[in-house]
Amino acid sequence: MSTPKEGTGDDGEAVDDAVRALLLLMPRLVGRAKRIPPPEALRSFALAPRHLSLLSYLLFDGAMTVNELAGRLEVAPTTVSLMVGELSRQGILERREDEADRRRRIVTVVPEQRPAIAGWLAPGAAAWRTALTPLSPEERRMFVNTLLAYEAAVTVDGR
Image 1 (cartoon, rainbow, N blue to C red):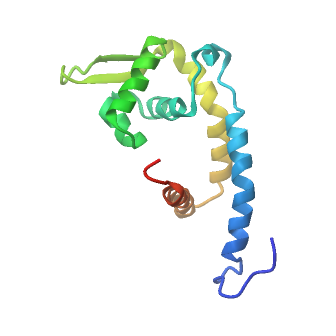
Image 2 (cartoon, one colour; image 1 turned 30 degrees about the vertical axis):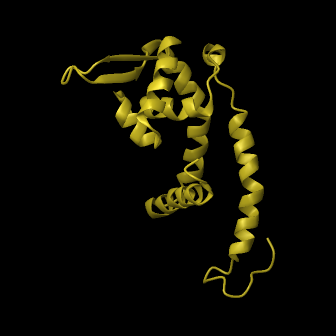
Image 3 (cartoon, helix red, strand yellow; image 1 turned 60 degrees about the vertical axis):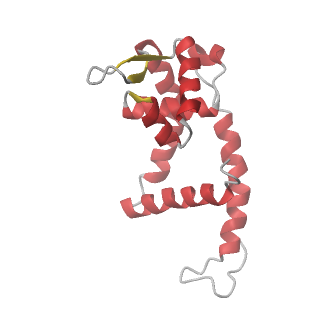
């Protein structure tokens, strides 16, 4: 990084220097994430990054409704319903009646696919654990909030 500029705060690092570093880093991160191939058992399903987010929620947080998934993914329930239908037809997800309310459908990963999906998520999860473990809870929260703020700032017309 270059020499700090005036008015850069107590840490001496210029915002522009940090922006430059991140502009160079982000394409490499995205490129590496895209190169993580799905496991052999899932390759024939043509899964996309949007599927990875949905599957992550179901794997880490357990079964949930389409509306719950839509809220977490911040997309319309119809979008999630289409993805769930597609993945259900492929034998990756299943929908079942909610025992507490038979009008609702619960979505879950089929047991046979759980190991392959967990294997697909494992490299990314391990890398994040390595990066985040040395940080304090407050620093982790700030890091996640910073990424969320970046996402919001680059979002154009809700896309």
